[in-house]
Image (cartoon, rainbow, N blue to C red):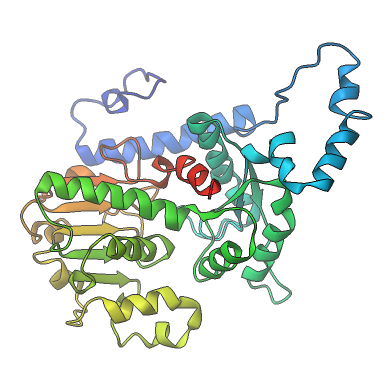
Length: 373
């Protein structure tokens, strides 16, 4: 292997010329994972706390702390809204997770999510100057089950310290209740990045891709692979943007979403999925290969690949097909394979492939906008 250029701009170039695209893609994934482990170990993570106010002499400690800070406490006591001006609260986000759905790795135990939550804080600081704190919580109840009410109670308790809350990597169906209750009951914005963030950037990518393909959003046939928090929210947002739900077919690990899905009908925790069961797939198609025939768009956020989506399924799609395979850390099919199979536009959730569609493209800007409402 050639000498590695650590600016990572041309990572493809470090592999021998006789490597196939699949070997390069797999090699990049292994290399990035190893580099991540070594780098995190070297730095001890990637986030630290640093003062932003100066100490211009010893007595400034008495300004930033006692006795001067007493005035800050009493001012905020008399008007809680001044906490956004007199403390860092107005520029501070709590990144909250119980680490039960970390990327494609599933339940990583509460501290196992710290790498991703620190990553969110890292991106918020570098991309928008927003401070953030990783808060990985233990949501187990006395029965050894993950309890969404524990997350809800935790966020409601800590909200006086933050300007906004970013929910992250909470497994379904708990994530739906956590988001809906907190948005209703908290005094600060609460944003589920995996759901709302991913949906916003996916819709943006879809609008642009349809423009390049010269297709109308109200006419296209869309197949969704995966019906978790991200993809179910994408479907709902796309419908609001003009997609005809009757032209939409969704699949999860148990098959197609149809009116016959008793699991969703009988479990009120999956109210979003049951709503989609009633609105989409009116013909009741249950075979994924059949659903893909003539489809204009595939939006996949499911099992990491690279063999989850077959090339022959892509080949059966309509002319100028659009393929978003956004599972992390490995897409359901590599973009080069999707293009070889006939895709007009191929996108993934990774920044080292062309056409990244990832919630990191939308924050902290959208979260900041929400906080002004």
